[in-house]
Image (cartoon, rainbow, N blue to C red; front, side, top):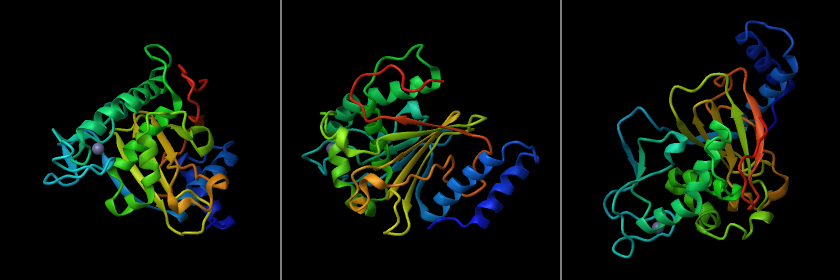
Length: 276
Ligand SMILES: [Zn+2]
């Protein structure tokens, strides 16, 4: 569903009002309002967690857990301890999962975790302390975090994505999958806490990706569309990704945020992906 001219006009007016009726940003307000509405009219939140400043919380069953990534359960798979669902580099200190087995944890850590950490560092700190990383592995790290928190009823649509995330051959398929961009929203003020949110498309036949994942930490919101979802089989190449700096409703995001699209499809090691 597309927003009407009137809906965009009202949302743009509201942005202008929130900025104290400052002139000269009319076009930016209009385009941002259109993207906010495109998201709000076509998506619903299906998961939303704060990641720090709270006592630890645990997803999944503690008794007889089953791994989300290899479908192993005890005694074939071992679950020594609950695992962080996404890394500390994305601000997570308190959200854990019982549904990641020891083998998948160490496999992912080695195959994608370090790359994601270095990618986040390259955004937050510039090149200073950053080691090189593979962009597509960093993308898989974000996708892996989304799959770790997605409600169980949705997992059935992501079998291929789960397999892809766990595949250590990053060259395989990465060039042909498409849509491996990270939408990086830079906010004017750092967020007071880190968060993760997932939103799913409401209607089956709209040209938007089925699942969008958002990661908020510090002054950035990282947004990705999950590839390889069976609900997207008819769209693939021609999908449109609504660029929302906040998944929490029209007018809930910052008035000023800058967007950069960071392509992460490459397997060639990089130090930094965006010019500041
Ligand atoms: Zn596993």
